[in-house]
Image (cartoon, rainbow, N blue to C red; front, side, top):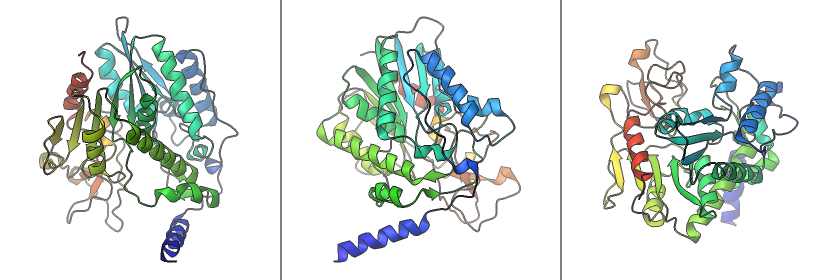
Length: 384
């Protein structure tokens, strides 16, 4: 009786926290999803840009910028590429998240493509539309297109995208390796398994002001359910067999969404290739004896950084939107009741929920070690 009671209480708590959206077209899903199985990547980009232009609930006066920051894209090297990588973003984010890494890798000779998962790029209500099968199909199709152009294919993913590409690669031995940034293998929320049931009872789990161009701020319950499905699948894949090709994994010790220790444990036990690397942003984990793991301090007082966030690893300090002097600052960071300082030069930066007496922490949205990250990518992807 007690376990059933606990489950009922958990459901009631979650339902009580679910949100009711305002009466606005912004919170009504589109009629359908954009096509994603075009015969060429160029056609895919063109048709998806048109789709975003028609269906997006724009949040600024710069429509072109919003399209650019949400559309799939390709970067080509100056010479004919022999290697290519397909990047897959996370839940609620966009292909643009990989723009800084893509720029560097294209200069290194890579053909780089970053795709738009169906349900993204327009309005958060469109996350009510896709099924996991849609996300798996677009990765399979776009990987095939990339294979047709280059002889060596890698996959990269952020958060939920890391789950998706890891599961795909587990069943496709032609994928040469993986680059995974804050992969969402192990969520910190112990109630996530309830998400599929909640999605039948309530449409939204979070409603927020949409002020972040490449990232949804609101979340339908169906989107949470999709993330849970990727977690279940990737955990099954990692349990079934080791991954013996090279992989780079990055993780913040203070990630507010994931279980960093479980991810590190999985890397040490399941990702067996000697060229693989794990970059841990935080204090060196105790009893660490894996030379493939590098720990970098995330407490950088000179930069007013206390901890690293779930998302900051992907962006250069010079990024025009999320960088140190970028145009967008994520002030809302889980610090209710604490006033935002008028002088931005007194801001501190950290993970979601970072609270320190006497300091206001905005979200950290850039990586002070970005050049180190590029060096790690080159090491992991180097020819054996």
